[in-house]
Length: 111
Length: 116
Image (cartoon, rainbow over all chains, first blue to last red; front, side):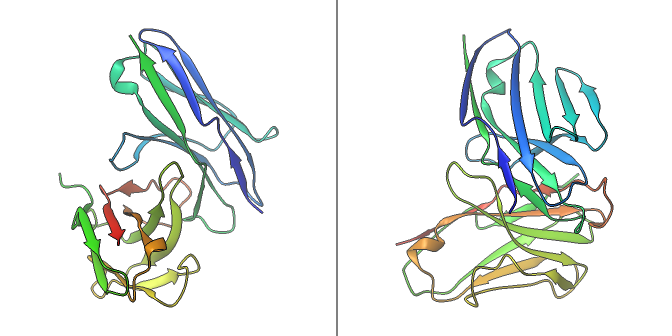
């Protein structure tokens, strides 16, 4: 079966840094996505990793280790508006379109 | 530019009724996806269209669910004889091509379906 694990909830302080981890065990791998989802809204694309290493995009960075089946999303200089759920999704090798989704990590930012 | 739009934003219906949910993808996107999301869960894949055809409908839970995309643009998800367990947010996404590894899916705001 396919399995993606993320912490259910995390709390961090405004201005700080937080790392959200995602581990996966899937039958194939053809890339990993991170999406942000505010309550009651649609998921919005944050990042995509297919090769090992760190991808930086402004305050957000995403890291991938394929050998360990592990990724993390790093958020710097946290702002109150970063309070949201962060979803990790893996694209399987045998179907380039189908994504397997984690349940998401709810991030709470405190002043 | 316009993103993915979905109508209605909310739908309340009674058990046993028929509902239709509409998705208008980003112009020019050939791939379209329907997902269902329950509270505290990630999206659950339902069906994928490449153009007008349903390339993969393996995620549809049973034969009460059906989706069409007759002209390769707008899609309609149809649910017959609704049940309380169908209550969820139904998300639609589109992507430029669907079959390339770098293709990114862009989501609409969803339709919140409540079956009483």
